[in-house]
Image 1 (cartoon, helix red, strand yellow):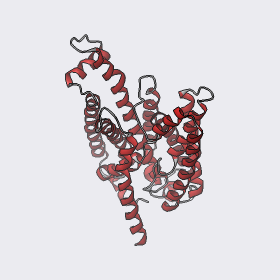
Image 2: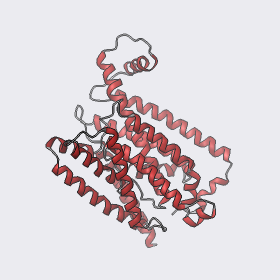
Image 3: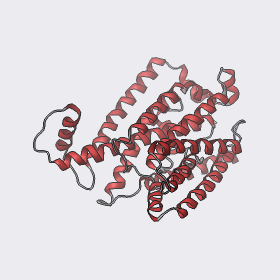
Image 4: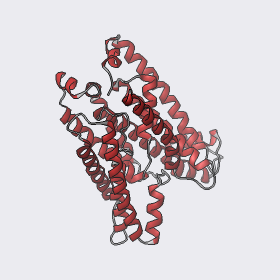
Length: 358
């Protein structure tokens, strides 16, 4: 739980806070644009900056350019740009989900992946892959069942971990891990029962990747991530209050149960859509909010938007690294996010255990 004095920045001149936040977001926007350009340029076949800019000028503004091969148009516009935009949406969406969950659970270890929310979405998608061998399952239907799985998983974790009360951090983590193990086992069952082709697709999908990003399937993840950002940002003050404890929130007019239900549904929608398109990309929602707090503090009016930009930048670079390190082959992005997040998780868990022991 966060202490009250950490939010005393509210008493500081509001104009100074707003200007500072705006400047930081502007800086992150510039870094994000730079990251997008790097994500388009670098890959198994590198392209020059001028080539990329010429393709974008032609496709976006209709400016006629000469001397650019058709292969460059295809790589930039049909392959890399949609992929980078999907990574942006996934990274930003997972980061804000982690920030919101850490607030409502008053638990610094909360994250869609750790608490089993992603696993809930993944088991439903695994079932959809399995059923796809029997009848055609549309991408829209996969997104719907992914959301249902994420929501049911979250409700189970909160019920076991004592969401209605002030939850114990260790109890929530343990209940999340238990649900995670159970749902992973169910996913493995459907992998075993699937055809060889479906098994390969499910296995690769569960490792996490944005390689499937195309113009015909990235609109929903982008829209949902931006909508999630707006909805969670509008609840930023309530998250500040509930982070101090349910009693404090109630005294200031916030109904914890309503806020928790709202957050559960929002996080389930965002996580479900991201998982259905990208597979399991773990620990982004855990690491990014913690890193952002070190820079911007715990005020969710800054934490949520800055986490979105930081998560987007992080995943764009992780994807770039995943496809560049062994080019022309590529590695699943989930491997690298787990390698970054797992040591951070262990370190924070050890620190929390030491604090609880006094």
